[in-house]
Image (cartoon, rainbow, N blue to C red):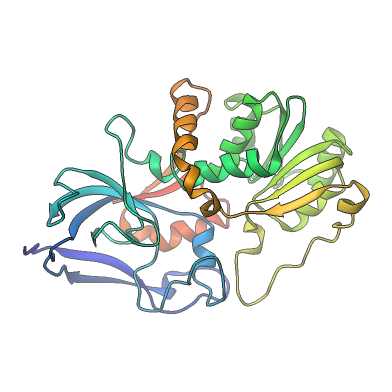
Length: 338
């Protein structure tokens, strides 16, 4: 089966030592090969962007192999089957998979992130965030590690991002007092006015230390951390006894390989407060994705969880979209629409 299609794709050409740059990639154009038996062709519609992608560019041991030089940049994507020689996938099927930064992808359905179908009754982009790894990260990180109880004070860093905003809304559904930390007045106002957070701290214009001390001195039961750095230190000195600190990400570090970020200075507060700090990877819960997605979908359809997308159009913007995550440029889930 001949496709006769020219594919545009971003290929990794060098490993960034600091900030991601278009210079680390090359936007190539090449004809697609013929489909072999057992393969199908997907036209991508949306590409997903997460801080973890920056870590995949470092040639260091991690939970999955780094992106290789000369390889299409790894990412989750959603798209539609436009040709198939695979009996399980038909033209018109809507799919999610690790299709990468490219307009088209040839797949056999397997891989590091196996292909899954997208139900016809949901927006195509939602499996890239609220019904995908982003929503699942918020769900399992908060419920399994944070274990919030009604009346707990839950603080979320990176709260206006896709993961943080979901984790905070779940905590509110469980009857918790929720405080978000985000960058900028608009993001903070969205957290309180639209998502129902009890308070929001603008780290760009306010002292996080002072505001946390004022809002929840020695009272943080759960700290869901997407940031690390000084914000993590500020939270540690305001923990309640037997608090749970959930380490989801460390975007303040930039996930750079050249210089490791300093560890938390206030970690002895974990001893003083008899508290626990634990990291996790959402892939640990893969056998429980189905029921979790059903619960997330029920909350969204009932209007109890709201989602926000930050969409940039054009595959040429992929490197800048990834870099923008570390500058706080996105407001909600960062996507590129092709």
